Image 1 (cartoon, helix red, strand yellow):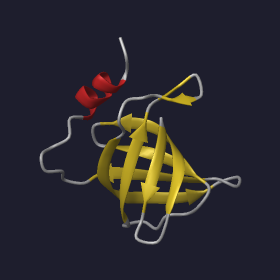
Image 2: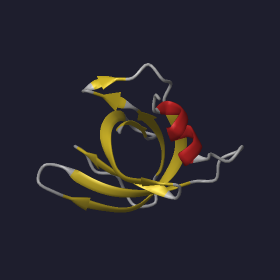
Image 3: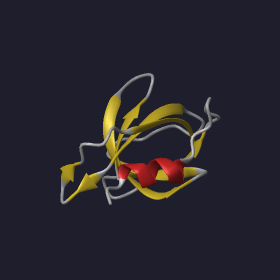
Image 4: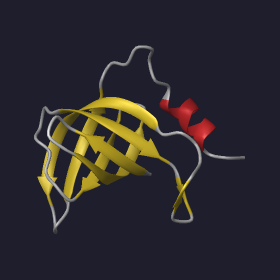
Length: 97
């Protein structure tokens, strides 16, 4: 899934990996610091086009960060949401049919 990442200093896009109830991995072109609290918007993309469904927004904390080949990998943990976010249910609603 495509993601929009919002930090206290910037807003940028990333790609998710290993998405689960407990968090997600992010690949992006800039580093994040471990411990940073961020807001992540997840966008469903079908055939390289962003779907019409609204994004899923969640607060997260950067658990670890690693530089890569011009790319940065991060593992982010979901922060407590009020009301709690059921990621599986929201993803099911985002994916058509």
